[in-house]
Image (cartoon, rainbow, N blue to C red; front, top):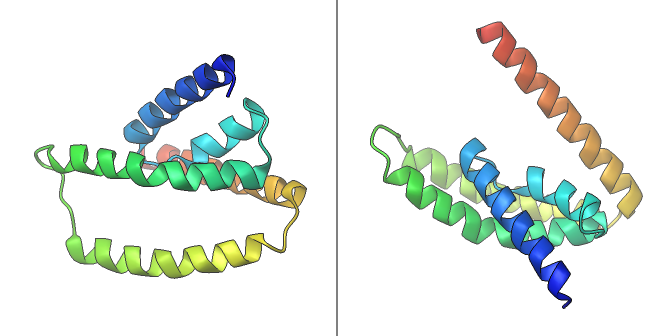
Length: 127
């Protein structure tokens, strides 16, 4: 691997890890666009790498959050969500096998815009 690509991936990792820990996202929302737009990967390639990176990144962030005082954790919610997220991940990866990179990228972009708009509206209404 080229040294410039190693540096690019290292900087992306630091940036995505920092923002992921700050905003509580697993990295897919940040890493997938970064890998597609900045590293030139296909949508499916970026999603594959993002999912693999998400596990250790999320685990480290989880451990750090657990050591903060006053941060509650509902173990039952965690177990139920994790079990059904595994089911959902199998459904999603089955669906992705029928999609082109282009349609997947467009769908991902629309999803990010919709969630972002929803979060902004919710924050404005709460303020």
